Image (cartoon, rainbow, N blue to C red):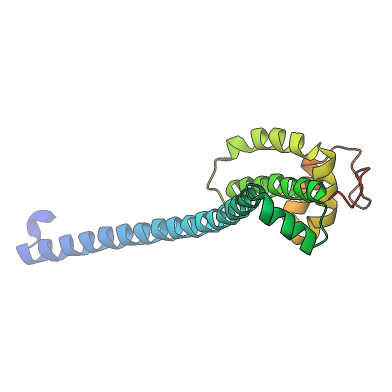
Length: 171
């Protein structure tokens, strides 16, 4: 059968085969590129949140190292510095957990780390100041993160509809 084909026929047949192979390779490359771009977008989203958390932490720590400015800031805003520090530290803990949650849900960290994250996060959410701050700030987080915190992290005795024993003035 192949012996009956002319060189032009074999050339045409090879061109069809190579065109099919190259087309399939291009489709696979396109799909791979789409996945890579999607992961890069998710990674950038997580990095942006991490950058915000880091920026807030640096600003807060910088303010703590400038007692004169901290005192002026507290007086100008009628802030009890000790309560404010607890609130900010609690916010940092929650935001750090949020960033790790984003990394896990966006696929930039392997799911095998989920149980370790949950264990660390449960410890953080066992702190009364963090629980109290969560009650006041939970509405600002995505609904899926709210569910994660309330179903997976908060101790069973923590009621999401009522504040904890820590006074609201401290958080």
